[in-house]
Length: 242
Image (cartoon, rainbow, N blue to C red; front, side):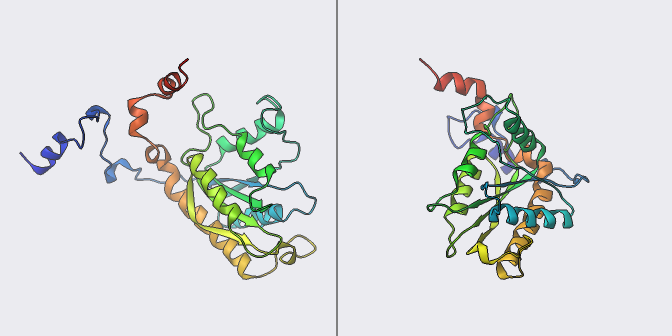
């Protein structure tokens, strides 16, 4: 018996359902790349008239266009608090449609009381993991950024990384944190040259690379043994027993 055949017949545990196992090989990945522009959704967590998180997002959108992506910015103004309206509310529907449309995302929140803002959390909380069999965030790329009124901090980006993981997104390694953001922008809203701006360029460039690399294989990358063994409907029935 060959070594490969022996491996095929030997399971790590008797608990494993062999017919549901899949050993990843290079041939599983798509050999071709989609030719359309990467679709990137940008979210920010402030409603202020001069919102520095929005200004960072606008700079990122310009960079995305330069790097050959299609960028759409969601305006959270008018979005109700979670569970206060039905999902057919126009701002909720707009958000969820953009989530489905996107192949990658950028989130930028101010840091408030050592955390992301309530606005940012409300945006994310309106998006379920599953909508009628569609998972609007799973397998999509994510970049996280924050702005601070004081010294540089990473509390907000760290929390958004946790949220991104919970939403089953591929969060890129790089990130941006702009300290004393009120000093980093001109009156017209454009960002001044700085190391902070250079890092934003780094993050956007890296996000485009990861999106190009993963978008044609996102379904395979997030395919799970546990879900091949037990469907979402079966899981729901099991955990909601009376």
